[in-house]
Length: 327
Image 1 (cartoon, helix red, strand yellow):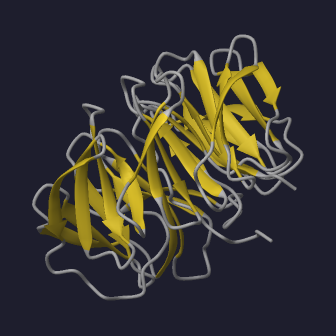
Image 2 (image 1 turned 180 degrees about the vertical axis):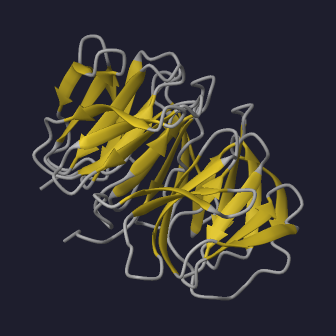
């Protein structure tokens, strides 16, 4: 079936881009749910899509090993550029014009302005250890966070490649999911002594754990911080999504409606809305003031949504992707 692996709202909120197993990227008008454009070019399934903050560019990554950059407003046909083969996208910088990719061996970053390569940055003191999934870029500080299975987090400057510091956060680390926009909190799947698995939230300054969500089902569920850093959305093993108020340390809403794990979560730029996607084949939008669904289910490529984000929150990097559970 034509599963959808990537979703992204434009910063204006007018458009929704989707990409999936059928190698196509569709752009939808959110208000009418009408399909506006279809982009062709990838030679394998599309893993992720993300708009720049001015909506001029749409960035996509694919299993074909390419990153492509599109101009969705161009007429009559969308312009596109094929960027460095075999790179993985990391994310847009805060200004929205520049984005960063990383080589598949994890040793080098590339900075781009549209299709133009600005600079190449080798990562200093790169640790050739068993890496974990999820490379997180802070648009605010332009720090890159990577992890190793031994529970260590490495923080590099994406500008210079210099390793700033490392943190030991767990006994075993599986995946990095989200970094709060203020760089204060880091969420990842890990195991501590005593077989305490689940989703953990750590203080990025000291590496100390501040919260644990045992109902989190790695590798299927996802987690995301709101842009203002007040909320954390967490997928659970019973297919619900819990939205936590981090300041009050309580669950604000428990969202139900998907028939399968929530494989994609993304907050709007004003932190008012949460978009969710699932392998049951739809995407939905929820109002966090009321906890009620306000859009969807949106269906396009078939079944299975595995990536959703509002631009320009910077909370997720396109292309960070787990093959677990795919056929």
